[in-house]
Amino acid sequence: MKKNILLIGGSKGIGLEIVKELSSKHNVYVASRSDDNLSDYDVTYFKFDALKDDVSELDLPETLDGFVYCPGSINLKPFKMMKPETFEEDFQLNFMSLVKTTHGVLSKLKNSEQASLVYFSTVAVQTGMPFHTSVAAAKGAIEGFARSLAAEYAPSFRVNVVAPSLVNSQLASKLLGSDKKKEKMDERHPLKRVGEPTDIGKIASFLLSEDSSWITGQVLGVDGGMGSLNVS
Ligand SMILES: NC(=O)c1ccc[n+]([C@@H]2O[C@H](COP(=O)([O-])OP(=O)(O)OC[C@H]3O[C@@H](n4cnc5c(N)ncnc54)[C@H](OP(=O)(O)O)[C@@H]3O)[C@@H](O)[C@H]2O)c1
Image 1 (cartoon, rainbow, N blue to C red):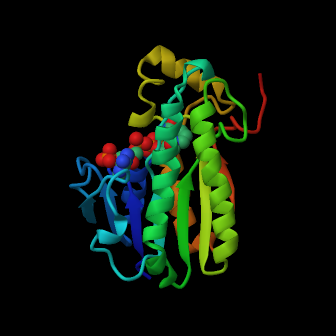
Image 2: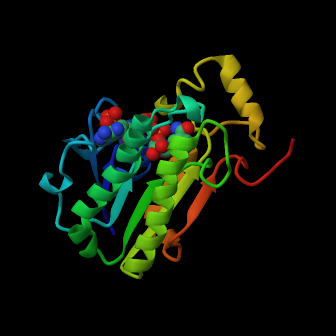
């Protein structure tokens, strides 16, 4: 059965991979600031800034079966150099706008037989990593929120979180911007490569599908072994 799936951010990176996976099978709605990469796909696009705009004003269908929140940040610095404003900005984009957009579509999700919500965290929540204080704090909030929401809305909604390690998208371009940097990052992972957006997009698409209908309240590490193995 065709589902109605809303992606906040689907124009690049992991979200675009979800578009590639799902747009030929389902009604996919993309709300992001740009539509640069979407012309080849059958999606309904809304120009939308999650930091400013109200999702309830979008012309969405009455029922949403899937909801994905993609916007995120990677601000890595020693804590003493990390300004409190950076924590606030990261919290707004990663967490508060996720809460606001989820809240804004609740009634549409409730109209689904069983809606599936997918959020993104990071491996750096469960595994302490230097310089990750801000992003780990903001993404940690998502993990707690998602588990609680999953409990509150079971069995009506399923809510799951994907926690990637470094993925080769525009967001990570500063960390992977040269062959040397990429090789170093590949080497750090037990599976000897950083992630590609498709590694994460396929898992998110699985979580939106009925194949995952008995999975809720989970944080799935999709991280080349980074979060659970020590092979050095
Ligand atoms: N890449 C990694 O290494 C990595 C690692 C761990 C976790 N993650 C998490 O995975 C998620 C996806 O990451 P990604 O690598 O795919 O990031 P990305 O390449 O930066 O893509 C983010 C998507 O969100 C949209 N977006 C950003 N800000 C927005 C805003 N204010 N309003 C509406 N849409 C906005 C972007 O579209 P527009 O620019 O067109 O608005 C884009 O479609 C993020 O939450 C990130 O924190 C990524």
